[in-house]
Length: 292
Image (tube, rainbow, N blue to C red; front, side, top):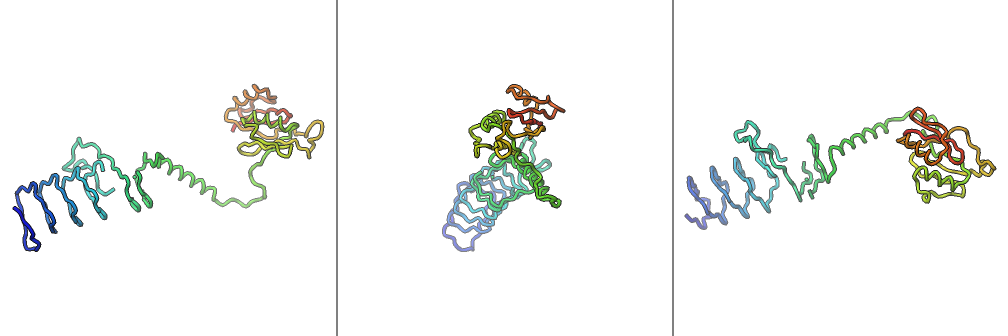
């Protein structure tokens, strides 16, 4: 059967219980056409207006849609294994189409997509919202999002504590220590010794004004000084108190004690209370090493 050049809406074609294998529809108007209980494998639609088309209870596996406008497309209650829409997935247990051997639906994949404002490689995700989801194992560029969020929440809580109102200040002095001054007789020898003990390159520590240098350490600073204004020119050198001038911190007290002993340091006490020991530097300053 062949129908040509019928442009008026006067004809109605009804085909029932027939084979249309190899049929072609070209340059046709076909509004409100219905295919029901029809086998259409390898069915092709090209250069066509399918706006507001409806597909229901159909097998569209391995179907290819390319160069298409799918704006406002809604897919509901469909199997998309290998491909949120909503109510998507293989039949659940109890559904007439459920099979015990159906396994899991293959993961979905989105690439080179314009997803701005949507709710996952080489895509625009600006404005995307992910809410009330299980994100265990979700990664973005290799970063575990769940761990990242937990760290972010912990930092927010920490910031909140810091922002709590503090009591009125009773003094203009800050509640933290500054650098500790260590009187020495020979600034270069003292610098070299301290750098060797603390693993600091001596060439990175410069002597300033011919009599002092600041050691690059974490926490409170250490300043070595021959103190020319405070008795440094006296034969015995600058006077010192008979108590430790400052403490050095360690994570391994026993190893630190052995290290000092190996380097011939004058140890004043053994390890006390499993927490500290005292020693003297080459200038006789009494110091401590404490467990951090």
